[in-house]
Amino acid sequence: MIIKAIMLAAVFAGSLTAYAQSAKNFVANEPINVQQLNDFEWYVREASDAQGRSLADFSKNPNVQLQFKDGQLAVSGGCNNFSTSYQLDSQSLNISLGRIASTKMACVPELMAQDEAIKKVIDNNKLHLGWFISKKKDYGELNLRMENEQGDHLLLAFEQPETIAFLEISNESKLCRSNEKSCPLVREITYDDLGNKTKIGEWRTWQGYIIQGWQFNPRERQILRLKYYRSKRVSGVCGSSLSRAVLDKIVEREIVQ
Image (tube, rainbow, N blue to C red; front, side, top):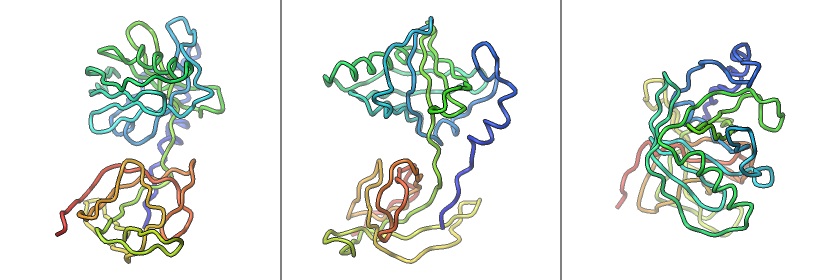
């Protein structure tokens, strides 16, 4: 059984508009917590300096993503990948970053400019976060703004998971019905609010076993918490059409002899 994700975006957009400051479209003093950062996939839409001048063009590559998870901030989708630790102060809306590690690839100038713009903003000990009302339809109404002490900032749009589900992955696999490849055996798990299993589905083959952030291990049984996004279609369970599956966390894992 697939659990519907909490529709935070609708709640924010409906309840926060009254707080918008007309000068800069900021949402005044509205708290941000770690769960909100973790619950969405964030994509860079703008990078600007303190005077509002663009640091790089993200319109031709809108897939540069910032992911917050388990105290780590990761940047991917451009030329190089960046990663650092972070700590959020929900009261001051400040986020403290650790030392940034990055790959050292060379790419076309447009992608390198995106890298430099992101690094210019996040290569600081402290950033300020704030919700931002955008008038650009492609961004969605509510965005997240990250600003460093020099005034350089990123504007982030989010992609909200359509559903969240728990999937048990067996270490065994069988021949897929749609092709000649082997597919892992999976079954859906339902939990109550206390974390108890209330329903266990039937085993079936996972036809589209590409799960972002996860790889099949024939020596392990695992239960995954997955987020499904509808922007990029993939083949799903038993050949049905499901949303793109992204690993949120491994709930259980067991080595199988």
